[in-house]
Image 1 (cartoon, rainbow over the protein chains, first blue to last red):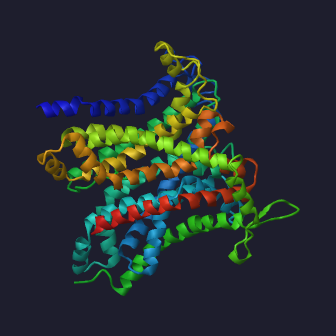
Image 2: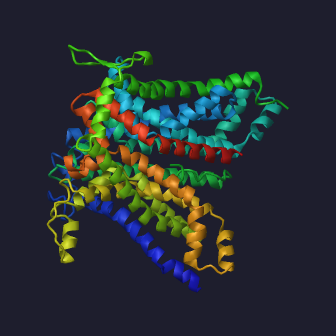
Length: 282
Length: 302
């Protein structure tokens, strides 16, 4: 009993809970400020939706803020649709394809994970301004950039699942007369379901949150995303409208994460035991 | 029994891996090489535009050497590099002081009650980094809640935090990156075999002694991995700093200088040279991190 008490109320517990408060309270304050009825960005005022809907500079009525929001969502959605198929195919291919080229591709796939974002940003900026000049700069290049850093995440998530599945189900299907592609499509892909779903959500969330790559590849107004908008106007803004913008995007991300958690839990209940990938993967 | 590794299969697996590999070559390898081609390339004497040089035999190292000289000069870019290193070290120290106790506590919490703690630790991952910085811009306004709290505590409360104040940058870096530090460290501490700790206790070691002689040495690899994970992005960070200081030259870091060369004053060659030097300084950390990931993947598949 005494040991349990100590672990629950000891100094380590106090530090941990203080840390959790410190990590979340500032964000909660920022959210609360977004509902201010006045212009203050440093203190609470009475509640209103002014900076979401009513004011001409609000998220809904201000063109730039609304565009930033739509851009972020479009970018994240398309990035998901491109990066996840690419990554799933790459993960399956790399797991089974033996040879020197495969080992090189395997290492290559991991390098973007350890490269500082600014390096990838500069590299893409230079290549699109100096070499691939035919690609229209702006949204297209931003999308290509987002897919590039997302593919590696997808591979890592999917591969963890591939390893736990093993080969025996596919081999059984092959013994029963399925072709390789049939075994892949009808046996392996359904088993990869939770991992693919988790990869979709992780890609969506990292793309929505990305600032460095977007900002190096953005060409200004019209291609701005929410993080770019928070960066460029959040500091100098005289009203909490940027707080409202950030809160809207946070809500979208949280809804996506919550629905992922629900779906994965249901999946797990139906027998797929290792669906707890989302939280641990990054 | 039909083998999955026949020659035909090889073609299928290689075919599946091809699109992703081609993508990474075209949009990662070529771009990274382009950094070298631009840094060691030429500048058109009339138009002042950059002409990348793709053939390493024709590379011109003159401009690169000039940047290197500026970095070795402690009154010029050297100061920026030293400052970046100091900020990253200070922020890393902050991460260790906050992150180690938290990771240790959660790893030692009973399985049943760990879920909520873990969920709360993961939550910052899903909150946009810049929103978390925006929150501090709100708090650190001159009439914000931090200064009010200081006033309430009878401390000097008119500090202008957001105007090139170095403690603000370090606090911002710690706040921004500590969640990325805690989770890998937690994973390492969680794997630590409890029997080691029990053995130490059975042999009469005090809790402090057990921690210093058993837990801490065994957690060194996890601690190193967690440190590398936060130090790498911190060394290239420019947005935390310029967002919290308004781009003050007093707190300028390497990332700010790179961003300015490329986006501000269009000197891509100098920017590319700086990126190369930054990469050379960080390559050991990157290699260590790469080996850690590769090893954990091999262990998982073994």
